[in-house]
Length: 62
Image 1 (cartoon, helix red, strand yellow):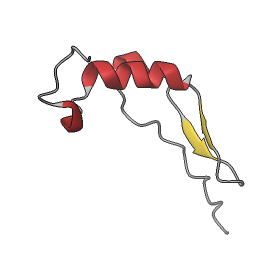
Image 2 (image 1 turned 45 degrees about the horizontal axis):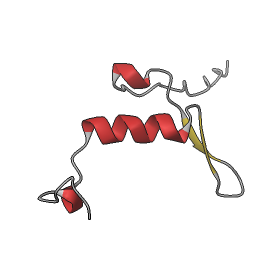
Image 3 (image 1 turned 30 degrees about the vertical axis):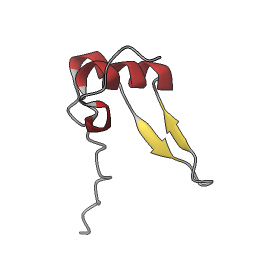
């Protein structure tokens, strides 16, 4: 008797609770497709990530 191979289960990665449901794929044309709007992702990154290029920069720009 041959055993049936089980299809690999798609595991969902652990993500921050604000990004629950986030999914990203690259299609056959090399385009990135996400389940979230890019503006929402950028807002999350701006709030939670430190940009070392902007350290020491004054908020006031002339």
